[in-house]
Amino acid sequence: MKWLHRLPLVLALLMPGFQGAAASTVYGDLNNFDAVNDTGKECRGFQIEIHGALSTDVTYTYDWNHYGPPRITEDKSDPANPKVLIRYESRKNPDGTWATAAYTAVPTQTLAPTDGHFCTDPANYSYGCEHFGVGYYGAPTAIKYNWLHDDGTGNLVLGPAVSIGTPTFAYNPPVLVDPALPPAPANIAVAANAVAVIPAPEVPVPAGKKFGEPSWVKVIKTTSHNAGIVALDDLVSDLGANGVPLWQNNEPAEVETEWRLLQTNNGVNAAKAEAAGLPDDMGDGNETVTRRYEFYKYAGAADTIDGETGEAMCDEVAADNLHGLRSNVGVTDAGGVTRYVDCTAQVVVGDYLGAQMAGFAAEAPLGLVDHLQDGEVSTPYTPRTVVVGGNTPFLISIGGSLPPGLNIAGADGVLSGTPTSGGSFSFTVTATDADSITVSTAYTMKVVGGAVAQYQLAVSKAGTGTGSVTGSGINCGATCSVTVDQGTAVSLTATPAAGSVFTGWSGACGGTGACSTTMSADKVVTATFAPVPQQYTLTVARSGLGTVTSNPKGISCGTQCSKTFATGTIVKLTAKPARNHQFLGWSGDACSGTSLTCKVPMVRNQNVQAVFN
Image (cartoon, rainbow, N blue to C red; front, side, top):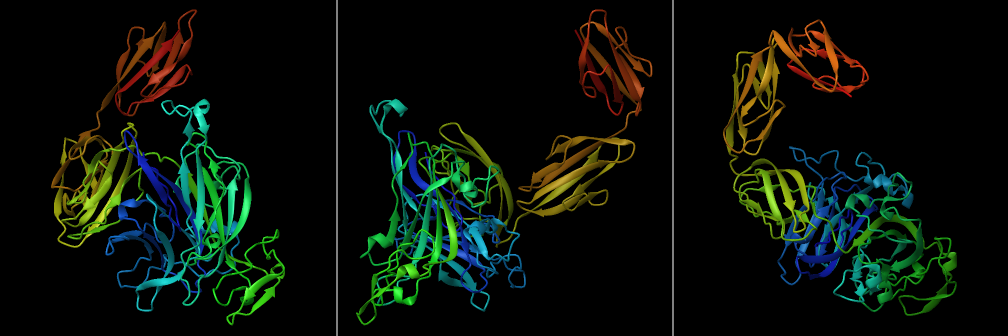
């Protein structure tokens, strides 16, 4: 079974798993976070760079921000260290200018952690923060985050590195008394657990220094865990209906709040390179661990930074969550002279940078990604994991048409190939895993470039009635055929004229509702209309002893249980139970309930049943 995770402005990593008897199992975490635009200028996107991973390692992405679904690409120029780039980018107008509704503003005020819910509102621009996310399998060697800026010529370039880190979870399955038996409580010698480690954000180390820019992380964890499933879009900072933050997964109030100073460094100070917590007990391994990480700037004065190495020396936070803790801290200046500073007099916790909500589970339920990026004719499509979690192999079926040249493999649920023709393609993917769990999702994918195949949609009308068919360029009446691009989803509506009724579709559509079809070939659709009948038949059936009579007269059931009435007549039926019987109610086309009377409009043939007991 695969474990997947979903995260926004950060990505989620998964730890290597093991091969099970029926399928592969991958352990990992699910992360989700807000990021504040602290670059000082308007941003036009955000990039997540994952080292040591392939595009097929990417699972869910968080797509509900000002930019929409990201574009995923691979860089395998260094086979020993492949990279995946997940880029959220502003859209452009046809004239090449930036779309007005896809940017991240400079914040108009300093955001507090409690304001993080504004980052999940795409209608809000003034707060200057966003929610992003990428889930993935495996254990990346590094993850980098950068805002994207316009370089002044309409091209996007990397802005400053974002000081937000991504936690990894090392999972230890339960130790069983008898490995041959299921992990029931009485058979667990040592409970399953996961250890979370959050590394220092990947920021550059200045030349000649040993440490990069310092930042704070405030680690918050819950008191206990449960087996509830957490989706990427649930790991946000909003409050749920019960007033508990969504990231807490309906757990009690958080405990164990800890401040840690993080600095990218050359390995000489592992304590500042990462923060590791105590193991989280997961019982038999089915429980989900959730955490929140809040990130802040280091606000200590310049004289608290080691002049030779760049190490921040006021590296503990007092109980007020603002000042340093120690009063006599030695700091070496660039000339090698040591002086002493009072960290308790320093405000060391600066502006809020964002928060990441993380979840970990040992297994992921079967699911399908929310969106698929578009393709280009004759250009290999970046392989994309479509089926996530569940037990392999998968049984996959496609409703509609995939772009020609693309396919989804049942062995791993990955979409790949090279599109051979352009167009807009609507299709539904249905996946069933080895546990017989089934999921289904509808997609629309555009393929640009090349000559787009076109097909003719023709509509005809049949029957002795009259009416019109409209939709997707058809107005039949006058226009009864159109030429449509391959993959276009069309919808037609049949409207009967006065004195006629629509009796159904034939050809490429069926039934009496709207006609919906996707153009994968020339198609013909027929709409049949019939005159409104002058009369309709009302038929009454009984169960038990009693009679049903009508007004206008014609039905007296007992003896006469069927009668034709002029179209539009309102027939009132009255039920009378036999002696020592009761009327239990109506059923059928037009009657329900237990009232002794029922009014039936004769707009079609009607069937009604009266039940006595």
